[in-house]
Length: 209
Image (tube, rainbow, N blue to C red; front, side):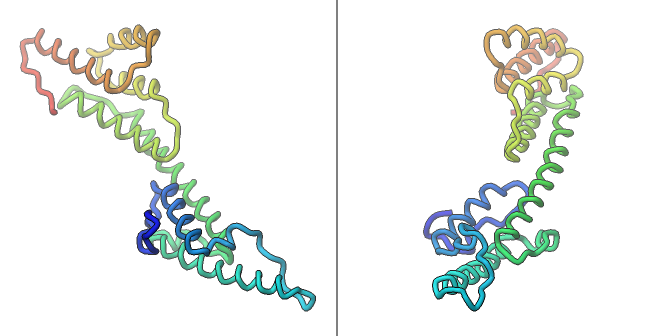
């Protein structure tokens, strides 16, 4: 969000963009001096002994809290609002959103990890497209702020290949002693192996670019 953007330019919250959404929200509230209720603890209730300064601060905080809640609700899609319990303060509401996001993130990451670890290449179509699909799944998992080691992804990719590629594990283990193989390097090795196997059988190599 650029400094000149307004309320309509805050990202709508989704299951995958919480960090960027929260950053946009914080910048907007800060630039418009609406984050007082987020920066300072909730004031004590006013009494007849409260000073004018305390009354003024209480009023400012109440106003910014009300506006913050409006902005936060605006930045949440209608389909998500009903699943998040409304709170009295903006701070509590943001905490409820975090809980909801973390729950959603766990569910998404679990689903993506299952797809990643169970994906198998049956030999039909392009090995390159299969491996790029695994790369895409890995990127989606990382977008959820979950650490996914490159070596682990390469190992998963190797295990997803059919029997005729299994000897590539030896190549991987040999290279691993010198440097970590990247997915790009694995894709090139698999394509070369695919070409070798097709030339040996006399069939035409079919690779989708």
